[in-house]
Image (spheres, rainbow, N blue to C red):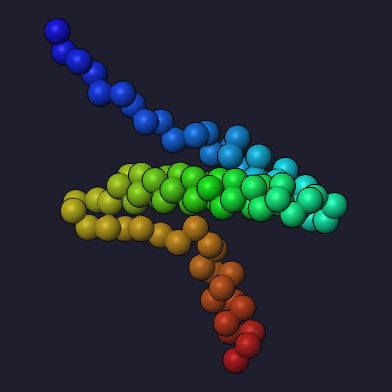
Length: 91
């Protein structure tokens, strides 16, 4: 009988982001006792790291999907044409 290693699933990105936004709003109110604010901040840092890890994973998946014939064809998510127009305006 094969034993399966337990999967360590990353928390859902959207849920983490929603919780993080709620924590930020709570801290921005400014009426949180210091000890609770520190715990809230610690949770926020942990959620930020989870979100960053999820985004890195998604970026890696996109890079794999965009690679062709062994050559990377990763493209920026920003609209490079807009940037070129903005750069031309500044000259």
